[in-house]
Image (spheres, rainbow, N blue to C red):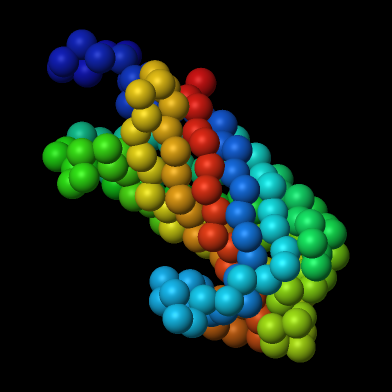
Length: 178
């Protein structure tokens, strides 16, 4: 199927592969932006994600989903699996010009063990929590390749889950389109 411009519907969607690394914070998510309050845990993460997204009509917004597999190390030694639904905004004239997109995702997270950083912060946690991400994606000189910075967050979603806890990681990654 082609649009009025002759572009195929396939050009309005993309598959991508993310590789990312991050460091866990002992703060609430918004406190990581304040250097005087930010306190990082002796715990990190490495992850991969496979994502798909499609442009919403002719708008600057894209809707998609991503599956993530994450391994934790340091104070934590478990795996985490996340499946967020993602809304991405792609600016027409970005400032700075190398900004490619900004996005927010929301879904579920499952940890193979109760995360120790969350227990250390609040005294409790659980394996299944809400998951959200917020991300800025940046163009690179390489075709079909970009870099991103992301807040990677698990939480009780304001009491939707039994344990009152959560965790945030600041992560950086590399994305390639397929």
